[in-house]
Every structure is written in C-alpha cells, then in structure tokens.
Length: 128
Image (cartoon, rainbow, N blue to C red; front, side, top):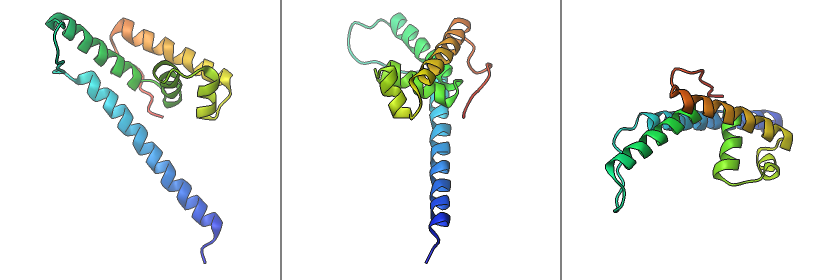
C-alpha cells in the first residue's frame, strides 16, 4: 500500500508541472499574438486602415500582457475581461481583495508603460 504523503506529494508535483506548462503556453500565446501580422476580419464596414490599427493595438496589448507577472495578469484579466468585482476576483484567486487591488495597480501601470512606449519584448519579462 502506498503512503498517502508520498501520493499527495506526487500529485502536487504533477499539478505544479501542469500549471507551469500552462503559464508558459499562455505567455507564448501572447508573444505570438504580438508578432502576428496577417489577421483578417470578414464583414463590411471595416476599412484596411482601421483593421491595421486594430491589429497593431491587439499585438501591443498581447505584448503588454506577456510581460506581466502571472498573478498580476490573472487579476487584470479576471477584473477587466471577466468583469469580476475585486471581491469575486479575490475569491477566485484565493487572495485578499486588497491584494487584488495591488496586483491590478501594478498590472495597469505596466500595461500603460508598454502601450505608451510600444516596447514589450525589450521590457522586463515576468513568466511566473
């Protein structure tokens, strides 16, 4: 019979590796979006100039998200994209609401920096 402590440690090791791989893939996705050149939109009413500007904005935002610390990126996406309140994001992340506020402040500041300067890849990179 296997010792429960060894099994639990083994499972946590597997979970840690899966999470690490997911975060690495997430950053790769944001970097790929940053480098993307030929996104197409179907439908009428979108001029080539508007499409080019939207593509550039999407690439710059993806680059900005890629340089955020994972915790900061998670908080930002939950509140901005997921439309969760600070309290809901705190529950989802298992952290206090004040920590959500701190992470959002850092994330917004860094995203603003990257979008204003246009430099994401050359900036400090935070994968974990």
